Length: 237
Image (cartoon, rainbow, N blue to C red; front, side):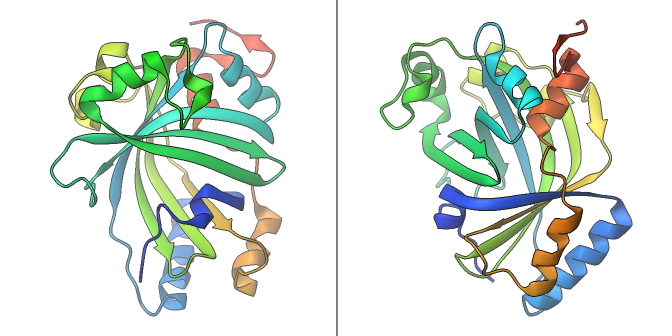
């Protein structure tokens, strides 16, 4: 079993999402494990912070056109197997359009994150100008199933949605679930993302797309639950 977090299936891919109950998710993970020769995925705890601009255009777009949207976020992993002792985050711009997802990612030392967000970076020109502000933190536990560059399945549980301040989001210290405190809202379902480069999926796995939920988004779900956003505007809070 190998992991290719920076591979082609991360950078440009097709994907579909399943929203499952606990028993359904356990059955799927068992089948994935068998398909990968008995592999048992180790859990990773992830903290993701989503950013938006004044007026929340990215939030509104994610809610109103979930199949054609753009997200800017950071991610921190525990354990972070590639950190080499340095606190760091990965800064991502993720574009989703009609089932095709494209990501641009750059790893940033935690201590430099505020400067990068405020000043922009050549790798992620969208964030230039310093107008992005942290709007939502999401915590979850992820299991990854992958054996090649052609497809990857992630299984996310224990999803929590948090308000987040600039001091926490951009500060020099790793942002863990403990530092965020209890989530203001949570999602007890299991979110499965099947990511692939075309038609390389095993037949049984590709067949699951018939029951997929392409509109599910942690960003949209969290903004709706924590900030009361809906597709056509703000209800309150």
